[in-house]
Length: 257
Image (tube, rainbow, N blue to C red):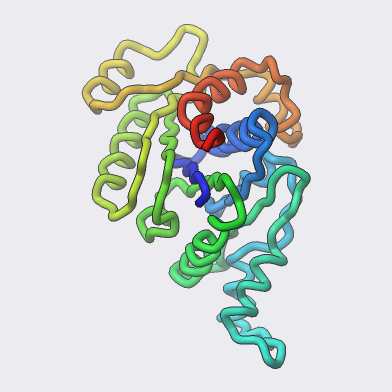
């Protein structure tokens, strides 16, 4: 069975950055293969990984359901969809990337969610690690796309709004019928002066413990603004090392099984 890591948090907090650095940790430090899943309609994980994405699950949904693509003779609809999903996966040297995409117009995501859930159930047999970058509204967790999560990383910014968002996500998760083995909180883009007393007070009121404080980092900012892969940042980068140390506590044990 795969070890599944899921990201949660408001858009722009740094979820895709953290997901990318976790993927780097698993592939480089542990030497294991990863299925990276971009389940955010904004599809920013591929950019962070430096991958060009051409096909998405939303595209498959539109082709098969909306435009009723011609299914080859002798192939069932389910098998054809599975084939299309496999074809949409971008295969890199150390990881594969599957992108959810955004449906055009006000279309229901239920069918696309079902496709993703079914594929992930099968993928658990092929990949030792799955890293899922969820969208901001937690749609995929609420619809049980990720039925089992070994490690949920809740990312939020060092602001009052960020803390409240993390609290709302926590409340939502507690109401869902999903097995989550471990849950950690990562506060992102912390300024040099640290978090304010007010933000610290709000975190205490929210009742959760922050596992790591990620500082604003110029090297990461430069890579993001230039469109370069975050996999290219230096191994000495402070943010990468914070993520590395954090993953050593949770993921290293799974690699030794």
